[in-house]
Amino acid sequence: MPRALVIAGCLSGERDDAGVARLVDDLASAVRADVTIRARTGGRPVGPTVPEVLAELRSAGVRRALVATTHVADGRLQGECAAAVLAASPGFDELRLAPPLLSSEGDFEAVASALDGALPARPGRVVALAGHRGAECEASFARLEAALRRSGRTDVLVGAPSSLAGRLSARPGGTVLLGPLLMSLGHHARRDVLVDLSAELGRAGCVVERWPHALAELPAVRALVVQHVRRELP
Image 1: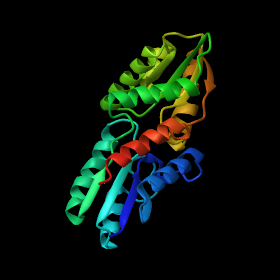
Image 2: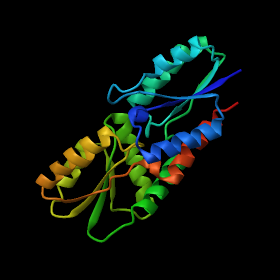
Image 3: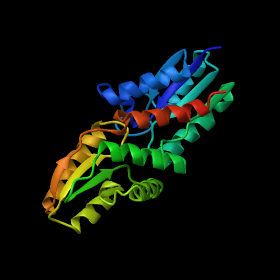
């Protein structure tokens, strides 16, 4: 019986992101699916949504599917994806959903270690990583920042753009290395983080350097996503 792999997240429309391409390849190799397809759970209206993809698979006769989420935290988008999977379940013999990147204490430690290696500390510089808005996301970001602090990285701030702007504006004059805490370096990361937030911090008196990369570019992060997916395989 054919198995489908649905890679769900905001990165569904980002076709020229090398980190995303490697993540898709890693997931496809791990699952050994007969069909691999991306689905959208937010962001720009590019590509089909999770309910649309699952309906298409069901109509095509696929009865086993695994949805691999690429969300960083268990926030609104992950909840919407879970609801879509639950609603579609009666049409499948087997339909499972992998958890988001930051799902356990070990996940926070692993991602903190990966970021520590990718973003070495530099005297006089603060590293600021901006992710999605929402109370659940902010809670995960606080836990990730705490994990970084336990590893000695007191120079790293993690949060949604609005909260980071407030924290950094209160300490003007320093250098900020600003980057997205997102799986893909797509439209949201480039526009809302690297352009809009960068400009806002500059107006507040910060000297801003940009880190134009995404989490999917880090091998340890891709390995963690694959690990989550493998746990859902029967």
